[in-house]
Length: 338
Image 1: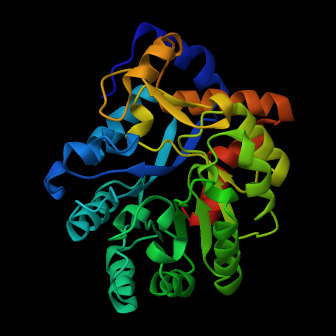
Image 2: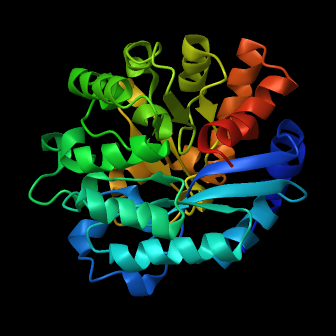
């Protein structure tokens, strides 16, 4: 269960809960056990916020929902932790079992880039998966801007997803994220060549800061099988421009659990993204902690920070209750088939 401070409870009860509809579908949550992980070096843990958490049993996720969103009916789309240290076979099997044990869990599989079409097809059919969650960290021998979408979202994955008309949650690479010209070309190719699948761009195409939003959103705005999840996006300007660019019918709520349970958010000084967080983490640089100490003191859970930013954007764009129901559960029900 996630411990809430008095301030967290006040934010929950006065700002978050009244804003949310009574039904939620969390389209972006990770579950798994520590036993699925091999050794992770300190250098790896210092690379990114994503290594702040490497396990979350499904039972703990359910208890976290009870604390964060009491009295809300919640269903969730769950993925394995898609890191190179993970035993993907065991991790995918765990998600399958979680979905069979919990009627509010829908599973997406994490496939490896070298798996064949037959292996991926068997994984989807036998595991009852509703989608795929490929990930750039699974690419061997490349990292950072050297990784392209084609490296980790392979043609065998696309053929299987298209054949079964399921979704792919895509974490785009490159420093410009969705606004990268290469990424836009590749997403357009996928959406056009494989019209039966749905592409869900995680973290609004990783557009955490507003400077690239217009180019990124406009580059895929006409592709009706491309969607966006809200996970880990904590900037109201990003949400505002996204809503103005594509409307509400292609936006899906996500918490990015367990990272959404960290007290963290992004800030964008000089247009560059910086993660800040309350706590001790290898990736959180001492100079960032010092220069943003006052902002860090005010942090609540990233899931709440994201919802509060979306609430501000909803006010700016005059969304009504029906629009919010679309974002928080109706779109996911339609797109993923929940």
